[in-house]
Length: 351
Image 1 (cartoon, rainbow, N blue to C red):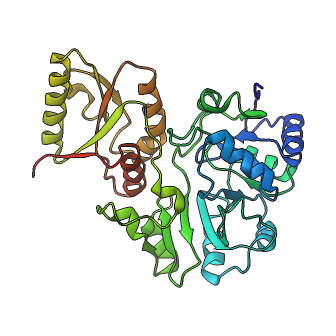
Image 2: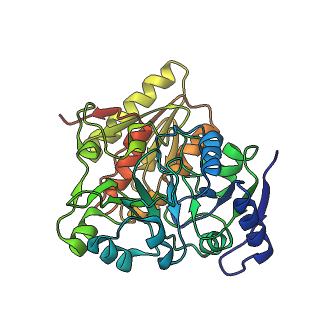
């Protein structure tokens, strides 16, 4: 089976195609669609068979919960046990937008959708195509990223076609996504809200709105025995086919070290990939050098991360070295994804 691919924009919606997508989802089929973060692989969130189809298509472990996407505020209450006041405050400020909230689930949501948990992850995307499709499908669409599990997340429809084009019913091509990193996940099942996955909405922004918010220890601990609380974060994600390592230290030391590694590889007849920035790309003498954007515009780094990782898959490189990107606001989210892609392989210089 080859997926039907339909192109549209938020300004020029193809309403017939959106209706067809809605019907596919109502009948238990799968549709990939754009959101402001990454492309999602949608199934009917209230249909356990559809959720199992999503796991199968992605090759995703079934204990890794799916995020339920809604397109109207009044769709939240029926699928959750209660809405804590702090969750309500956050929803009013950041929905629609790149925020996922974990709340206790109601009996309406099958455990196949929640990875066996008594909680449910919910998001209200701001992308207009996503919103119209969710409404056409009945209001509840479960959707992880539309990629093969473990691969870099898809930021264009072409990425979805490469990974899942033979596995699903329809792909809605809405062009390149806006943000390029998955939503921030905040868990409200404990007394103090906990960030389980950093994203565009940073810890500082959350603390400014709610006061006491903490980061899951498993996200920031270097000790591999400390597991992240979010089930999905224990799996390797976002990985290119080549081995990836992050080189950390001062800019001068990082450039020098990556140049040494690239020269060494060349001496052995190998080509390495290098992830640089606009500020440093011309300083690398060997290897396949790709700029991820400017450090002065951190959103461009987030926007291009997965695209760059996928670009290297089309090349002959077997090793990739990346600079670290501890930028002021989104650095936490960018480095979280990059470290996962590298399997936490870091080369420290300057020490």
